Length: 228
Image 1 (cartoon, rainbow, N blue to C red):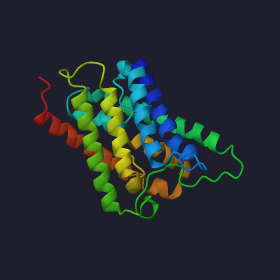
Image 2 (image 1 turned 90 degrees about the horizontal axis):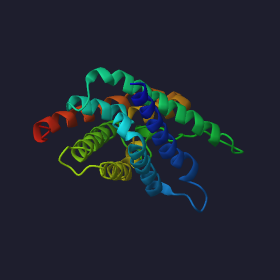
Image 3 (image 1 turned 135 degrees about the horizontal axis):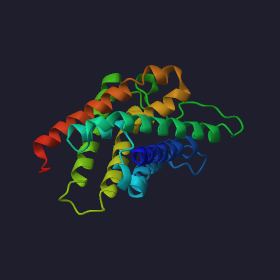
């Protein structure tokens, strides 16, 4: 179990550091900023690369919602959930700490949103709580369906990280304007702890909505999927 939890820690660290790092350090860089498209691909690439690197050890969840969805679908033992979630949140917090250390090394540094997730006045596009809730539930549910389908035993082995990574890229392309895209409670927690204030007060949504979406996907997969 130690190897599995270590893999989840490392994978989640890379997801948060690479994805949020692209937003904090590179998205708005003068003249050559990567923008929404670049950030979206950065998040997808983090999952794709670490799924190949350590997915064979732990399953490559890197996200509490993924672990919950897989447990509901019967793909992982519920007894492993707590350990996985702790490792994932720890990896996210560690990544946010390293990112903060790097970002604060620039003259005139201002924390700003620090790639945290939010709704209302803290939504990039000014979207409401209801819009954020629906977005996070739907996006997480379909992310889990992509994962469950692409890792099915009848799908060619070795290709799953590609659709999963591209799926996460698509999710970010659609939902960054709404919530700055969570679909991952660990990712949201790491950034919120450093922003504090509003990010902490809104963090509940980015746990509740992804977990609901993941559970829905797990139930749907048990109905329409074929794991026999």
